[in-house]
Structure formats: structure tokens, C-alpha cells
Length: 296
View 1 (tube, one colour):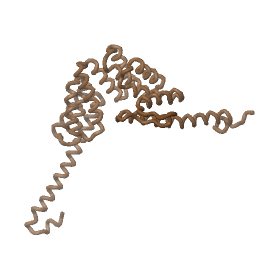
View 2 (cartoon, rainbow, N blue to C red):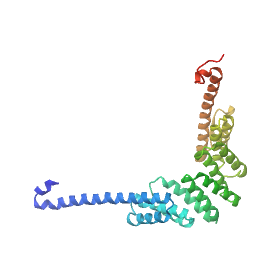
View 3 (cartoon, helix red, strand yellow):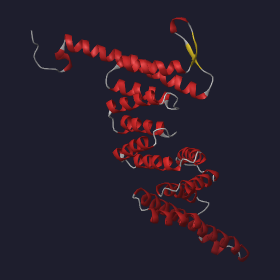
View 4 (cartoon, rainbow, N blue to C red):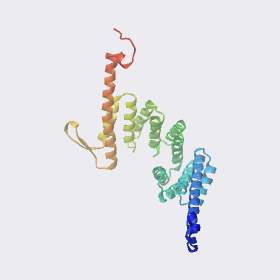
């Protein structure tokens, strides 16, 4: 840049343009940094249940940084705030606006799922059932697992014939399985899901979850039955002796078929390893570090 001062007078315009570009770039970086700062503050306020503060910060992002990634994410935050305020109609509008902005974010899938959930509930005029279910989902996200389960139990008790009752039962089982590692309770709730909601869309999830929980408890035979049942539900062709089979020709069948097949393969390996350890334990306990003396 110092060379600019030694150039002919007619080239000073180019020098000033270069300085202007640097200054504008610097202001762009500052704006991006401020947008990021506001977004993190809004997100933190939301997780701390400071909804008024979170909404104010999200609105500032929309107003001053509408075309930045953080400005788009502000729409998602506003939808979540509306959820916590038990305002599904407002949340629906914000989710729609967020997805229409074509965000490139990990929140996109969650927003699409919540949008479908809220839209279906409002069409069914089932907002009284939707509100506690959304609350349970949000409680789980915050790590308040016991509270989320309590809300789901209350939903099932108060709305036993609701179309979200099986969703609530599945969420309870899922929390016990993946979040709390309470496999006996997970098994009981998955079994109740299969028994009480035989036409539920969560039957495949239930068989898969049962297989995982039973395997964790060392009940390999029962786990294998669950995975095999899941695989059979999505099998189109099964050749003699059951050695070769093919899934049905749709995306979800191929997905569940493959997941069940993988679990059956891994289960066979784990079962063989477990059996080998049991044999060694009985025949040569000192080999496995069970003691420093051989009892004869």
C-alpha cells in the first residue's frame, strides 16, 4: 500500500478504492462477529428458559442481520420460543419461514419434523394433546429425562385414545433406552407399545429397541428374535433354508432390513465371544485374572 504514494496522481483513485475495500471487508467481519455473538446469546437464553431475552435477541438478529446464517437461525429460535410458550400456531409459521429460507444447518431436520408434527395436530384440532408432547420433547433435549417421562405418562393417562399416545409411549421407551440406560424399563415400555398400539407407526422402532435392550442385558436369544422379526417384516423374497433374502422395494423397508441384518450379524459375533469367555471362565479361571492360585 505504501507504493500508492509514489504512483502518479491519476492512480490515486485506485489506491482509495483498495483502502475502501479493506475497510468494508473489516466492517463485514465485524458484522459477522456481532451476528454470531447475538445468536449464541439468544441460544443460551433459550436453554436457560429466559424466553423474553431470547426473543428480543432473535428479533435483533432478524432486523439487523437478515441475510446471514445467524439471521436465518433466528427464525428457528423464534419457533422454539413459541413452542415453549405453548403457541403451536405461531411456531408453525416460524418453522415454515425458517425452512423457506433454505438454511444449511443441523436444525433443518428437526424443524421439518416439528413442522409436520404441528401441522398434523392443528389439522386434527388436537392442540391440547400437542402442547404436552412438545413440552416432553423439549424437556428431553434439556436433559430433564424424568420430567419428560412424567409429561408423557400424563398425556397417555389424560388422552389414551389420542393419535399422539403411541408417540408418547415410544418417547418414554426411547428415553429409558438411549438417555438413561434403564433397559428393563425400556423393554417394558416397548412391549406395551406393541401390545397397546398394534397399528402404530413405531412398531419397527419397538422391535429394534427391544433387540438392543435385550442384547445389553445379555438375553441374546430374545434379542435375536426381535431383530429377526424386524427383518421378516420387511422381507420380500426369502429363498429356501432361509440363507438368502431380499428386502421390499421401498426406502424404509430397505433401511430396516439392513439395520436388522447388521444387528443379527453383530449379535452372532458377540454371542460367540461371550460363549468363549464363559468356557474359559469355567475351565481356566486363573487365565482371566480370577485369582493367582489354581484351585485343585
